[in-house]
Amino acid sequence: MDEQEILRVLTNEFNLHWESGETPKSRVKDFRRRDFFALLDQLKSEKITSIIGPRRVGKTTIMFQLIDHLIKEIGVNPKRILYVSMDNDYLIKNSEEPLKDIIEVYLKYVLKESPSKLQDKIYVFLDEIQYLSDWQKKMKSWFDYKYSIKFVVSGSSSMLIQKGATYLVGRMHERVILPLEFVDMLNYHSKDREYNEIAMNLRNSLRLAISKKNPDILWKAINDVSYDLVKKEHEIGLTLQNFMIKGGYPELLGIEDYSACSSELKDTILSKSILDIVERYKLRNIGVLRYLFTIIAAKSGGKVTYTGISQNLGVERPTIISHLDYLEDAFLISKSNFYSKSVVKRARKEKKYYVSDTGMRNSIVGMMNESLLKDSAELGIVAETLVFDHTKRLRFFLSERQTAETFYWSDNGNEIDIILDYGGISIPIEVKFRDRIDPTHSKAMFDFMKKYKSPFGIMVTKNHLELKDKILYIPLRLYLMMC
Image (cartoon, rainbow, N blue to C red; front, side):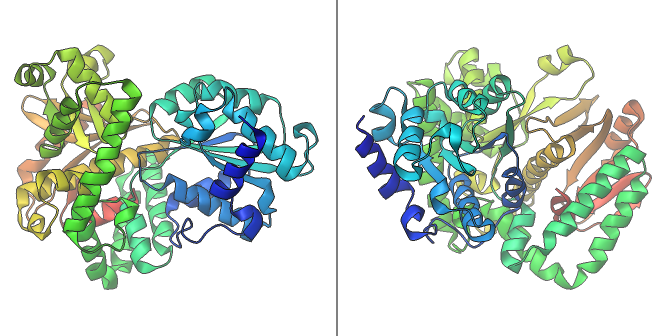
C-alpha cells in the first residue's frame, strides 16, 4: 500500500488532533465513568493496556478521553499520539503488514524520528484490535523492541483476554469495560464523582470483613452510608428505577423515551453484536443465536438444559453449547457454574445464564417501560440479574483479575442465587427484592454457611437493612453501590 495513502487516512480520518491540537468534541464526552480513572493510571505503565468489552459500550469514547487528557492535562504533544481503528478495511486489506506499515509511516512522516531514537514517549491507540490477524504476535514483537511506545488496544471479544494473556504474559494489563454500573449512573445524574468514594469505601469494608471474618465491619460501613444518604434517597431511588428499566449502555444516557431506547438496543447494538459473532465464527444459522439469546433473556438467572434446547430446536447439543459460548464471548450473556469444591461436580451440573444488560433483556421481552416496576416477578428477575452482574464486577475488584468466576449453589431443594468466592472464603448472596422478608428465606443461607463455614451471608432486599444472625440484609441500591 502506498505510504501517502496510509498517511492520508491516518491524518484525515483518525488523527484530527495532529493539526487542531485537540480531540474532536464529538468524540470526547464530558462524563467520565469509573473505568476511565482506572485506565488513566495505566498510562504510566510500560505494559500494553487492553480494553475489552462488548460493542457500543464506550471503549472508543474512553480512548479519546484518554487522548484528550494526555493533551490537555499532561501536556503531551498531539503529534506524539496515534489513534487507528483496525476495522478500517482500506488499511487492513491493502497491506500485508498493516500495523508495521502504519507505525512506520507515522514515525517517518509525522514525527520524523526513528523508533530506536524516540526523543519522548509516544502513545499508540489501536481500536478493535481483533481485526488485525495474529495481533498478539505483532504486539509482542513491538513491545519486545523496548521502544519508548505506550500501546493501548481495544477489542470486542473476551477470547482476546485469554489469547492475549497467554501470549503476552507479563506484557499486558487487561481491563474489561461493560455497560455502566449503578455508581456510574449516580455520578452521571449528580454531575460529580461523590459516589466513587462511597463505593470504594464500601468495597474495602467488604474486603476487610471477609478477611477478618467479621460482618460487623461491613455492617457499620453500610449503615453509615445509609444514614449519610438519607436526604438523597428519593433521587437514588429514581435513578435505580430508571437503571432497572434501561440498563447501562452509555448511548442511552439522556434518552428518556423508552421506545427509542429499546429500538437502539435491539436494532443496532444487539444486531451488530450478533453479526459480529456470525462473521467471527463463520456461522450459517443466525436464528439459533437469536433464539438462544431470547431464551436467556426471558429467564435470566435460570438454569439451562442443553439437551432440552437441543431437542426443541432440532440442533445438536454441541452446537447449542458452542453458540452459548459465542454469546458469552461477545459479552451478551454470562454463565454461572454450580459451586462445589469438586471440579468434576461443577462441570456436571447445569449452568445458570444471565443476560449481561438488563435494558437489553427488557427490550427483548417487551418490558422496557414503567410497567416493569409493577410486575413483581419480572422485577425480581431484573434485580437478580443486576446483582449477578455487579457481583461479577466486585469479584474482578477483589481478585484484581478480569476472568473471576461467580457461582450458584443448590442442595435438597435449597438454592443460593450467587456465591462470592474470595480468598478461600465463600459468601452466599441471595436476592429477595420484595417488601417483606420471610424467615424461611434464610434457611438455604444458614445451610450453606454451616456447610462451608462462611463468616456471614448477604440478603439483597428492596428496603430492609439489618444485621441478624450473621446475615446482612442490604437494600439493592446500597449493594449495587458497593459493587
